[in-house]
Length: 181
Image (cartoon, rainbow, N blue to C red; front, side, top):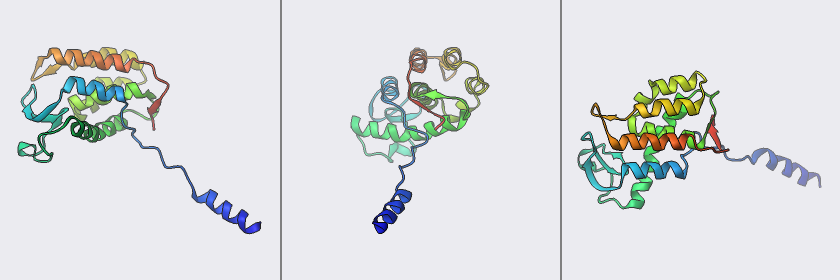
């Protein structure tokens, strides 16, 4: 009996739950929002400001987008999007102070916006400064996200709609807190 107790005690000490992924991946509502606004492109094509993209907004890193197998299927494009988003999830997680709580919809809306405008623009934005200062998150998102509707210096109707969708997602209640993680 003593040997069994000792073995059980050793197993209890060494068996631990896997650590949670931090930052977490975005939720399905975020993926759907990004897919809707990026649209599916099977072969490289210029985006509204002329940058070569493929799939759901994947910015090509090489000539002819040789880093991906073309033509893309929608399933492969979804996998590519999820992988691309990891960089932007990390940017949002690092930019928002650890004392600021975000639910999965708020985190997703910020990640969608960051995917669209880039980490540098997000990090230096008034939106992030105001969130980190402790202002009401829903108010900040509603006031600041719509300001990001320009491409090439001109307002784009698609960006106006996207920012509205991001505000709606941000303001959608959820009990799933993902930041801080």
